[in-house]
Length: 158
Image (tube, rainbow, N blue to C red; front, side, top):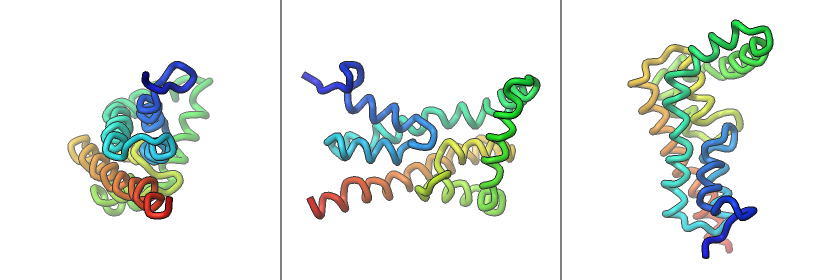
């Protein structure tokens, strides 16, 4: 019998969903996976795929969606706030383009990650063929860092 949370999701499915959620993303997914006792080699692909799924949609669709929402009185303030917040972090991406985006996504700090990196890339009108691989490399970089912090280091002490 597979353990579930609230009888709804398996712990693996929950790790997958956590990895898709903005802010938590792969970082939260790997931390949860380690705490939930999911094998590291099982958790890594689950969290990578979960974090990757939203990326092409953000890169390809967020600008037209934002432009459409900005035409409404109700959503304009929210969209402008999101755009301003994302664009306040555009410095290294704008300066270093591909490698700036890799580092922005790959170094797991608050306010960085695949969601924000993809949003900034879309708002800066980066070419999908450059932005998507940069986000993928960044996610792989974050995976190495977060796996070390979530599994390897705790494994040395517990």
